[in-house]
Amino acid sequence: MRRAPLLCIVLVLGVVLWGVAGAKDVEVRVLLLRTRDEVCLSSPSGLEVRVKQRTFAVLPGRTLHFSPGDGAVLWREKNLTGTPFVVLSRGGFVFLGNRPYRGRLELRERGGQLEVINVLPLEEYLKGTVKLEASPNWPEEALKAYLVVARTYALRNLGRHGEEGFDFCATVHCMRYGGVFAEDPRTNALVEKTRGIIVTYQGKPASVVFHSESGGYTDSAKNVWGKDVPYLVEVPSPWEKDTPHAFWQVVISRREITEALQRRGYIQGEVLDLECRKSERSGRVISVLVRTDREEVELSGNQFREALGVDRLPSTFFDLFGKPASAQPPEGVSFQDPEGERLIDYRAWMEKDWNLDDIITFLKLREEERKRKRGAREVSSLPDTQSKERPVWQAPDAFTFAGRGWGHGVGLSQWGAVGMAKEGASFLEILRHYFPGCELGRMVVR
Image 1: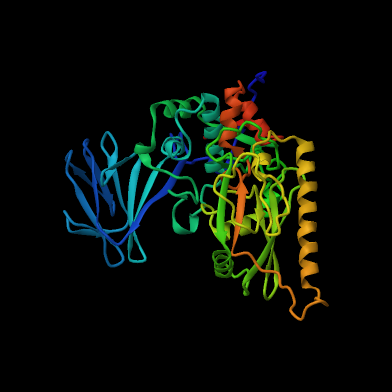
Image 2 (image 1 turned 90 degrees about the vertical axis):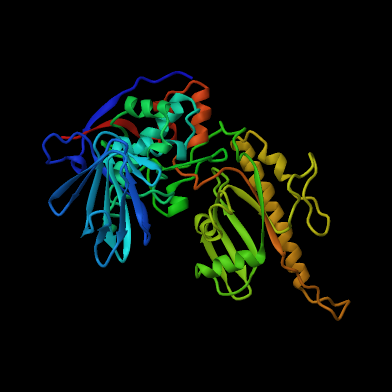
């Protein structure tokens, strides 16, 4: 694949301008822990503790103990209360228990709990996310693409938990963060190599997102979150044939689906049937029509997936049928309905290298299948003039979801980036593919 020249736009961002003399990095605040228990801090290099305009020096190797008190934090060794306490190493890392962190830790009391917040430069924060979100063994250009997206995401989402007094949590809600234990020498070097580079759209930081695997075609922000973003659109990702979730199959009981949708307040009745509406371009599920014994409710594919659980239903790139199938269908054997009518060989289709014609053909076959099923149900609901008993369509006890990919499907596919990099694509080419219309910029902090 031909490599495009790297053209960087120098970008001065008002949101990252600092009035503190000598400031060189954007700082982020990450919530590490919220607990009612005591926490222990230490450092082989010694600690410095600041509270109430006082500063204390702590010898190397000494362990300090802090616990939540009545509206304040208690430092047990000094029998001193206050909030917040600021603790930093005098030459290394601060250990929270046995986990080391860069920067400084702030300890404060909030609602009867002790909160521990890690305050550190954005670039150092990125180093502590990589091994939890990507593999250090991936090709360099794929890792660089991820790092640029992660940096842009962090910059755009500063203050996501602003009302709570920090920027990010350390979970998948923001980005998983593990401090120094989540670092790797190779990815640390790539953080420095891409320092300050971000994804831009029309001269501003782009609202980028990423996911693990697209399954062969990404989704759009419009389909998933109902927001039209010009560069978060459906794009093909044919580099994911041998990824960890290239094909998956999940059987979920009708009872479990009913309870999950009722918990979210989407339905009141009991689920009888489900029907999917798909994107004509990608084949991903746009919406799910839920038929119950009380009502019909149409949910977006993302609403349906989140209600069932994102770990339970890996992606919205699935086909659905109302009969449990074997975990691994035999090669060449098609699924059948209760009357023995042959349906689509889903496994064979999942293993194809899809092009536009394949997608159109599959959608036509799927629509014919739906019509046959609807026709059978309508016939079964008519009075039987030959019998006093009326045939009744029986709702399935479980639904089988056969699909591919992992995650919401919007933006950068990490495994797609790996595939592109293996074919010789640069990180710029990767980012331009998954974020069409975007360029690279460089954030400058004054």
